Image (cartoon, rainbow, N blue to C red; front, side, top):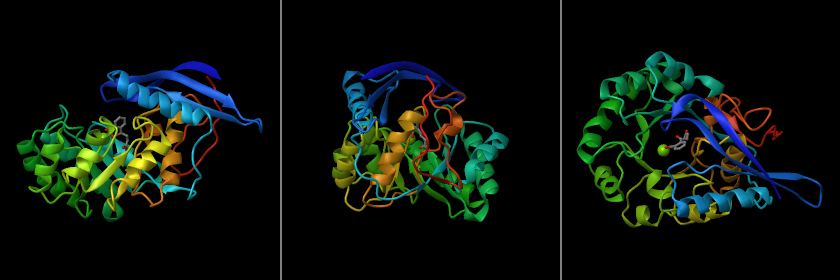
Length: 296
Ligand SMILES: O=C(O)CCC(=O)c1ccccc1C(=O)O
Ligand SMILES: [Mg+2]
């Protein structure tokens, strides 16, 4: 087993960081094929959360992913906390017709509305829009802001917001909010942090389930979680990894028994540098397995 430390630069600040670092892990199988894993837990992760990521990177490096059931999945463009002009540009990259727009978290409501309107207008009537709040609102704020952002999404002819990802932090507030607004609610941190969807399911706190392969402990563990959520729609999303880590998300999206909604695997667009020669990006709004020529 070989270990290669790396750092990659982001082109846009994301989650208040502008670089990601970690270790790539490689093994070679009997057929002479290389398998790569990426261990790059978020800087704020504690030992328990980081150990899940470690498990995921070993699974990848040992070539232990399950069989893939489809060739490609639809992917959303990711729109960071940027001004409306830049938001249009991010939303229309790589042929995506679904965009996920970051809102809240220090960005004021007027700026959020302008960003959502710009994306709706840029994508036009075929566009699907989602917002991600990263738990940044309290319950009343969420109940007030979501209808306004939903209306902003309709300005471009979109059918309102497809869903709001983690608008509030706690599972109890997610459940309460679902009963106060019409916009569907997606759970991300409420699943990613405990490493299970059990609390979300028990509280009936989400309409959509976000699965992040590495933070949840790997592709096989994420498939178990997918199996635990009944018929709720699934979305596989990246953890802002380099392309080696992104490949774990792609493997999960391709291995799910049920076809996911457009997945949050378009974060290669935010990388200024990468661990591979050619960054994994959506083509015509879809992603499948691509070449992984490691250069670190
Ligand atoms: O879902 C996407 O489109 C991109 C991935 C993303 O937003 C993300 C990436 C790293 C850490 C957290 C998040 C998040 O979904 O909140
Ligand atoms: Mg999220």
